[in-house]
Length: 236
Image 1 (cartoon, rainbow, N blue to C red):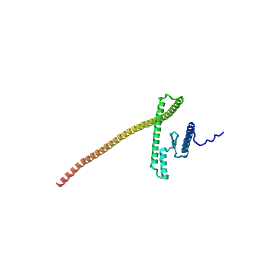
Image 2 (image 1 turned 90 degrees about the horizontal axis):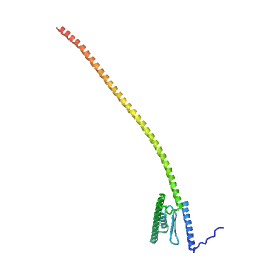
Image 3 (image 1 turned 180 degrees about the horizontal axis):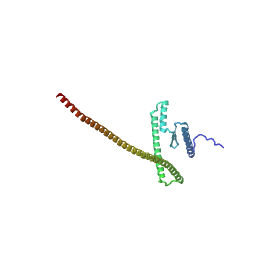
Image 4 (image 1 turned 30 degrees about the vertical axis):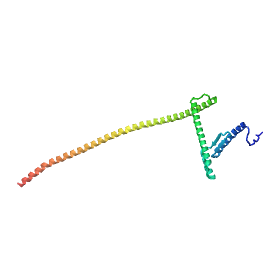
């Protein structure tokens, strides 16, 4: 059998009214979230319960950005808001900011509490289910750490191999540099010896030329004396 149709009217029973409010509110929040995700819509949902409690939901743009956009759109279509409405809106925005700050502080406290529990602190009052959840978190963290450690170990090994190859290449380059330096020294020695030999040969050639010139001069001197004597004898 299908469910009977529920009359849309105020529920007199307080307990039933609260239960219905909780269920319908959850469904409305879920539908709003699905609409924002599926249709990429900027969506803001504000609910006040019969007791005055505030419930709200905003898409990824945030409640403040959506309300500001709403205010700008309303001013464009309906003219400038009167000071009373604007003051009420500002007051409501301040309330939302305060609630957001409170929520963020609570989230930070929860994160600190979870971190302390992961360190083995503040475990009193936790249930078996909570402890098992902590164990699973620790095991997942250890698995990620071990995996990262293996990757880093492989990278370090690869870097060590590259460093060894670079060091080996440096040794080979040092050897080649030493050989080239020795060859350079030998070439300088050979060049110096060749230059000294050339100088010696040039000096020997000059000495031989000077000796020949001196000898020819000494041979010519007696002939000149003889010619002079013959000339003097003829003159007499």
